[in-house]
Image (tube, rainbow, N blue to C red; front, side, top):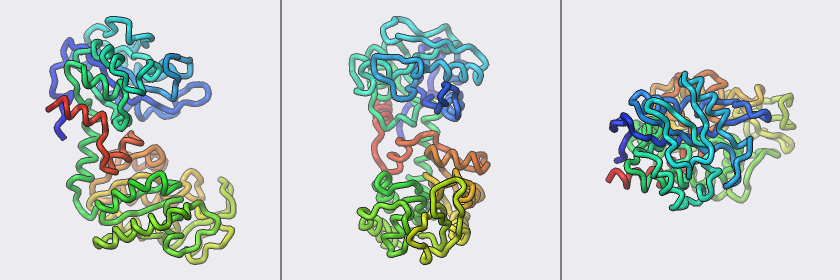
Length: 394
């Protein structure tokens, strides 16, 4: 992909505007509960600082109302955490769009308040984008997690800034996804978990054309089981999408691939952390059973397939891994992905949570911090933030 990269530029003394993805989860008191995205953004910020740039960083946080900054929407907690990680102060600047010069001194960094509080941000307002572009000499998009959105700080500003480029996180995400999908070492195996086929149907359909084996899990697997004439009891499923599931299976089989379905499952009568877990052959699932995980035989079979894969793309757990009684399936697959000599790429919030829980973070080749953008790239969709960087590099 032809895009200008931050590492190719001389940033000394330049006003550098970095759009990061610092949208981190917080508890009711505003404390950050997972700083993964902040830590992932440090490399790009530090690169600019070490080059002697005058660094401005902004991000969205939560779902604020445009034109209104409430205390809960402030990036102040993020700036505090970033300050600790960088080992230097990170001041927060409010009302920055019309403030004139907001760039700090060379080698210093300032946090520009929640960009989604600016009127026109989500609609990609051109006037707003031009104002922001005038604040910088170099625009850096290092927020792959927002690349699927055409907003003022992800798309519009890139049109008008003197130079527009990708930061190291954005560059790494694109390289990892391209490696996994454009020219993968085969067999290419995808794991797609989640509660509903409807939310990932287009991804399943797109992957069916690319992968050699498609492992489905969670509620998605229940719909595929039902489509194959197998009992699922009172498990979550989407009966109106059975034909779509059958078409995905047929597409894989038509080219010699497969959608391996569970041969055994872990069931309970209630969805609760203290529910009694029972392993059953899939054909023996009763009318009052809830399927909450794949069974040990299925986990072993799938783990063997993953260990022989050339490339693995993983999005979504295969069971209710948050409950220990139903975590074994996802745990087994996580370790199989980690043990595989093939290239492994994982993304999505639940997937990252599972990777962290089962202690395999350091053994996955690339972990994407993105959600929607990761999924849309898997679908083969053009991402506006990447498209504009390609246009500016032409």
